[in-house]
Image (cartoon, rainbow over all chains, first blue to last red; front, side, top):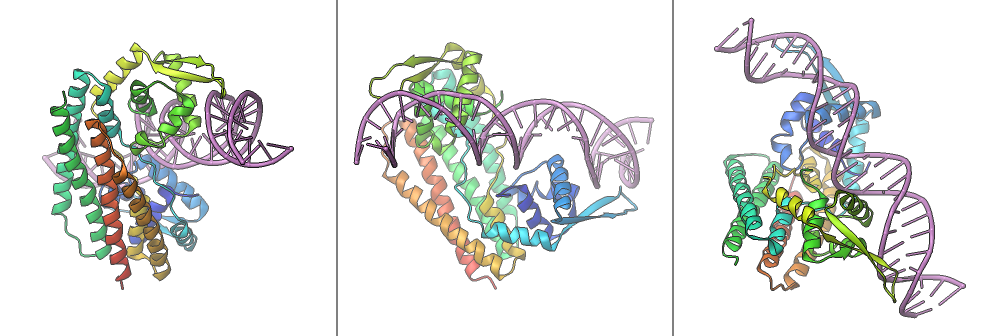
Length: 173
Length: 173
DNA sequence: CTCATCATGTAACCAGTTACATGATTTT
DNA sequence: AAAATCATGTAACTGGTTACATGATGAG
């Protein structure tokens, strides 16, 4: 295993043991800055990790809600995480749809430019929204602050770039 | 088809017709800012696109080198590109290994912090390198300039964040 | 009684990666 | 003769997405 959801889950479970359902919600928030995952995938991977002995799940009965299976990391899981941390990361693959779209306008007609402009405006608004969300968050832990600043940096960068792109495409021909 | 390599290839072929081999090299450079692809994948996808009628390949004999198959977009391919451009992009999935690694240090021991620091320094150097590369490039086309500024923005942002992260992790406990 | 939330899964599919393979031509 | 570059592919695998499915519990 080189790099996958497994390690993100190990990190999350070390912060606090959780059920698949709870993990899925945490992957929509803080951890989701850097990694997203659906509940289907999380359940599947948790079972595999249990089989590998990296985590151990325990059924917890609940009165007011359906029962849940709470997972925690094992020493083997911690060892695997340490191994992965020591493994240097390769170059991150870039995959940016909006960049491809913008590039298409270099040889595109009026209609294509208009379509990309519409998408750029949507994208700009989305980044502005997320930036506002991040700026409203407060954290005490220095590492979480660092992670948050990463999110702010990304959103701010893209927001400015979208505005730049809109300006360029509007004044194109 | 919602969003995939196909559209990046259509954009590239509209800029200039090319063989699979040539495309693969262009995906290592300019287009690679926003999309990467191996030659294996490119050949496979080109054949499928030929089957769909989005591109048409023509064998070109060469004296000094092996023959090649040069592809160009067709009207159907252009139509498919226009359709995709009009289709609003969904939220881009974030997947950032280094962010997961940094977050692991929040509950990690000394050895884990040291491992992540080492990776952060490697990552920082890589971003600095790429930033220098981008800053050395010159373009005339306004759209290509825009795309290049996007690359600069990303690299600069990550470079600063890596430095931030190194500072935080060094002064941690 | 119905809807929202909590909770857990299976199955089919797809895009992309990795490993393997072949052959022409040019340069050293 | 060997190595580098140009050129094109196939096959197996894997991580992740999408669609489908079920059931408990509590709130209105």
